Amino acid sequence: MYRIEIPQSARNAVGLQRTSHNTMITAKVRSIYSLDVEGPLSSYVPMDTERFSLLVRVMVGLHQSEGGEESFEMTVCTPSWLSDECERNGWVSGEHKIVVSAYRWPVIEAAIKKLVEQHSGDSWREVASRVSQVGHWEFADYRESI
Image (tube, rainbow, N blue to C red; front, top):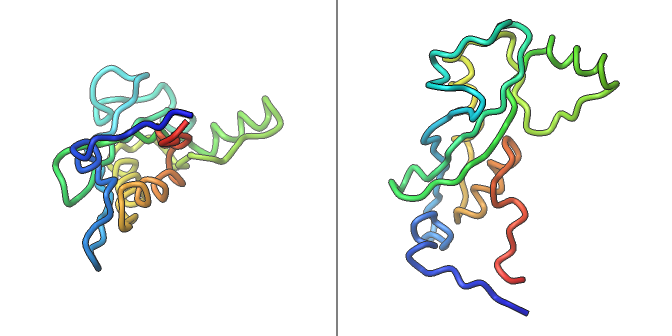
């Protein structure tokens, strides 16, 4: 059996350590982008603003720290796109999706920030676990010992 040790400096960078008594740490959105879009999402316009799907990556850290962030991915889509997918496949998984009426970047950005930044906890792992209900966490299946 192998055990992976995470250096204390790395644990501190992303808040893996527990906080002092009665101190909650909270999630903070650092950036939002898509690997499918060149440039900022604020400049992006899909071919059909009321029928689209876009995978976005949200980099999340802590309000209490400037260092460290991890990625969470979610799909932003419209009801029309969901309907098309249901017609095509017979079903759609609802996990890690944010449904909006149309592509309006300020609305999408505000929704993502509200959904992510409402989460807090005693440790980064606790916060990240809660945020992972909104988006797929890059370390969701990570185990410290193998």
